[in-house]
Amino acid sequence: MPRSYSICSTDDEPCSGIENLETPAVVFRGMERGNDAPLHRRVFLEVADELHRYGKHLRIYYDHWESFGKPYGEFFTWLDSKGEASEEPLPDLKSCPRELLDHDTVLYIDSFEVTSKYALTISKEDSRDCDGFQSMPRFLNAKGEPLRTGRDKGWIFVLRDDVLYAAPKITTVNGRSKQRFHHSSFFGGKAVASAGIFITDDEGHLLKLYPHSGHYRPGERHLHRILLYLKKHGVILESIEVDLQQIYHMSRELTGTVGSDMTKTSKLKKMQNLYLLSGDTVESFLSHKRRMINSGVFRQIHDILSVKKLPEDEKQCESFPSSSSPPLRSARSRVKSLLLQVNSRHRTRMVTQD
Image (tube, rainbow, N blue to C red; front, top):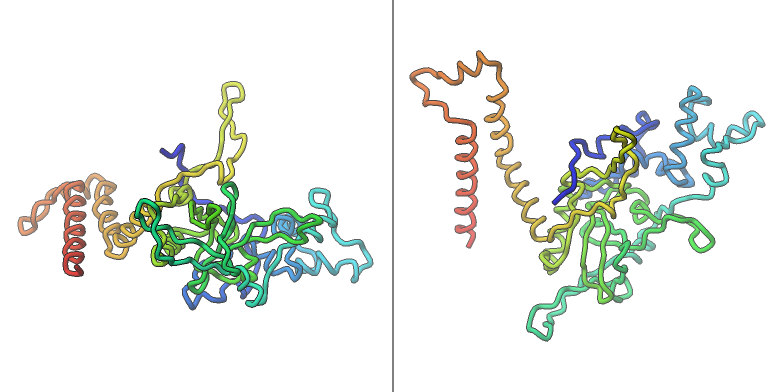
């Protein structure tokens, strides 16, 4: 069972320092084709920067710029051109030295030819194992080789225009890796249909799927979309595990005891806070939830239960309807009746389709 829950989603947290930053146009490209997951606003500085310096470091400088009253009127003018105009040294903060800022950059691919090298295919080999069971489809890279992500960190992926792309995530810039590689790297910051992390075995069989992306912040519909995509391509969803910590809004905060007080001490990483369920269970849950939303059931339940929150005099009026109106049933009874009607309609539709 989940350890704890948080009422608030991380997507609702304020984005310190960049609330008024103009949205880069590139983040909306492709949305008209169903790629409805744009980059999160916390990454806008990284996208807007011509050098694509790491967004976390840029935000440190942005906060400093705002605290001084936004000198020069434009952030990147202050950051990179101040010395040319006044012969003063460029900003250099102790909390993030200038050398670190300028050398820690993220790769943003602007060539589809390059991006296509990360494309995946899902094999549909009609083969069976020694027990006669249908073999799981395999994920293959652009060279036709099995995708081997390793069982620890996995590879990051994006789904865009009905094609999957995947690569190892690079978070450290050193002699071997000149730039970071994040979810935003595949399409240079453009919108995608889904994003997350895959874990496969050495044969290219999918084992786990995590809807984790700090850049795109995928929600329920994006997770549902990738599951339906996998199902369409023959992946047996009951054989994979999916992390639901974000869907359930599980808290990652740890608390420790200091004297007699409970004090927040740290925050778990997503990989340390996994809540895994089988893929078919997750897909079924999301499909049923979507059906309930589209049919207006949740809205009707909300309206029924809101009667409990009326002032006492209004409740009495509701409890004693006019003689021409049917007696008011309890909220629980009305909700139960409503759900039975929805399930009955769903079963009838399934029989008709069969």
